[in-house]
Length: 303
Image 1 (tube, rainbow, N blue to C red):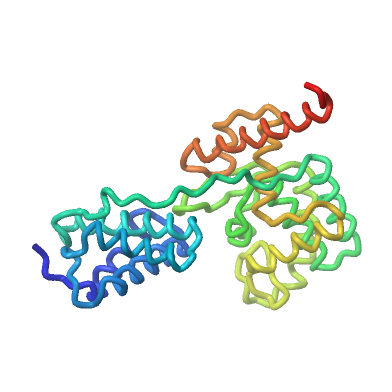
Image 2: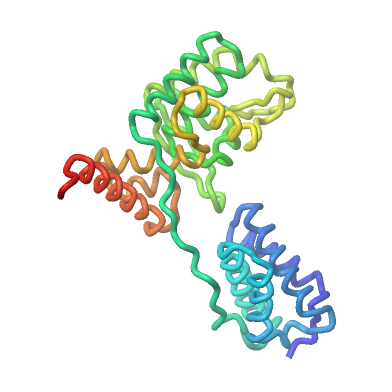
């Protein structure tokens, strides 16, 4: 039996390395897992070795979070973190028995994503294009951002991570680095191509102060554009276009839903979005079904 104590930072550090290199998780995910494990170890106390942590201790830890009013999503994530940590600790010989095998955590109600209808999405893109006609770098950047988010279904982190060399304007494709450092090549249409042409014809160079490297989208201070600035821009454009307020991720949801509504199959949408599991993509079929049901009930209120 191991004599390692929970104050040993080596275990947590090695777990973080496993998540990063072994599982290829994004930095934000690794930080969340590590933070949860550190919170658990602090809860059981510094003098308790890993092998002494049992199922009752894990349940007490989750119960404390529930009593303090933590959201179900937070508790579910903590449960997942504990299961991942102890499964890894068992495989690496740090514990003899995995106490988290039978640990249950709250199920998170699966909410349907926010989706713009096709016409409001078109209005949003058109408004962004109109605002960009003055040629200002900020307006053109906003235009290319919403066009790419909608055309490719990219996550906001993927968008800001794009380099100029990732875009093939001749073939109208973009190489996206997704979760787990997995690459995918996604096509985009003529409207996004026009926005990219406008951005790369001058506005990008106007903002470039030599500190952005190969970044496709450059911020006001000359560095790579940030995720927070993208979110603020999308919210602002939605208000100016007088459509429902949306975030960048809502444009990803909208792209997926519209692809399915237009006849694309699930596998194609899965590849476009970079989902590792088809089950994740399948939720968009529920969105389409709900929209169809709402339209039916509006057309046939007595049905």
